[in-house]
Amino acid sequence: MPSPPKRSDSSLRSTSSSSSSSPSQTNASTRLTQIRNHTMGSASTDTPPTLFDANVVPQAPEDPLFGLMAAYRKDPFEKKVDLGIGAYRDNNAKPWVLPVVKKADEILRNDPNLNHEYLPIAGLPEFTSAAQKLILGGDSPAIQEGRACSLQTISGTGAVHLGGLFLSKFLPKPTPAIYLSSPTWANHNQIFTNVQLPIKSYPYFSAKTKMLDCDGLLSTLKSAPERSIILLHACAHNPTGVDPTPDQWKQIAEIMRERKLFPFFDCAYQGFASGDLAQDNFSIRYFVEQGFELVIAQSFAKNFGLYGERAGAFHFVAAPGANAQDVAKRVSSQLAILQRSEISNPPAYGARIASLILNDPQLFKEWEHDLRTMSGRIIEMRKSLKAELDRLGTPGTWDHITSQIGMFSFTGISEKQVLAIREKWHVYMTKNGRISMAGLNTGNVHYFAEALDDVVRHVQ
Ligand code: LMR
Image 1 (cartoon, rainbow, N blue to C red):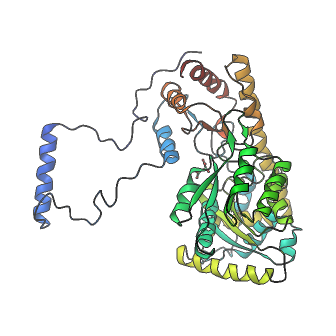
Image 2 (cartoon, protein in one colour):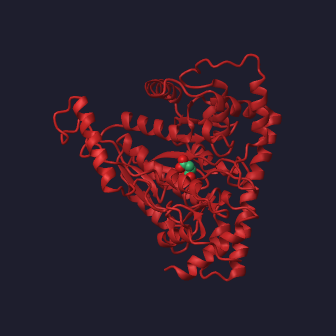
Image 3 (tube, protein in one colour):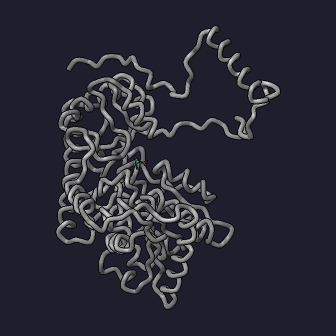
């Protein structure tokens, strides 16, 4: 294998760094500024005509994930590999429109009754009720007893935000902290900070075993103040790919009940992790069965491949009891006010597609098939990568590549190694060593394994 050429592009450098300019360019631009200030009536060049100078609005860093995506796109190297953003790719490294989504899209576009009217504030009713059944199970006691309420949201991010906003506004003061797993999806921190929920963390991933730090997690929950909110990834944990086993979920639930902790589930990968919708939702169904009052953020970006359509839902489930329906009704009414003030009503098209599929038994079956195609290809890639690393005798143990599940694998390589693999091999992954497994395919897994082997051996 020829070693890849040293890159010459500047995508590793900060995109915000300005290029150096010549003295004559600088003079010309100063003169231009003076003329502009003069014609606009500004008295002096050092009085900026803004309320938002750099002390008030400092330059924010670029979003690391979307910045990485942009750097990848700019890179002209032919064999570059994108393992950054969590979006499914087919075996040709191309975005994949699910065949069932293509079909539903076709049906929708040919529907003579299709229009572009506003949806209700809570979203498309047939979508939210199907989303609720999917996440809680069709036979869920919470649905039968009318103690669940659901609103359509701007995908999972919107649902996480709506839930955070609701809890921040209505939980008794002082507002309890929300505990996030360490590590977690980077956006969780920003979203909950924006709605003024204090943030704490619980141990989750053991760097040593590359498995769940179950003892650390349980002992933190045991000492968390009553009524703290605990953010749980329902399945396919982002970024680690490590999920609790059913027994571990039971232990988590037991302690949370004892300590009166409030579960906030984030579910972005139902069906995408194992290929089985019910299996991927064990945690949520178990907690509901145990009688918790809880909330759920549900995304349809990954499992329908509807990334840009922003289809998702937020669910509130009241604990069983005489007043449960009343609680759900009141919560639902306040959620509607929050929704109306923020987005008025949610976007229609993605929800229409998902709704068509979720409510039609034949299309639903085809969707399950597509889910197995995506999860199956990812599982195959895990096996291939592990086999390649074994073949190369790459130092370290790599069993976690096949034991982790879902979109991501936490490789365990250092930030220095991540930067080196980008610089030398044009392989793009997040700085914490996370790779999106969907970016691997039969054409690049060998190349990636060589690259990984190289940095593990030579970059300390
Ligand atoms: C990811 O973590 O890569 C995805 O969930 C995309 C995102 O919005 O961060």
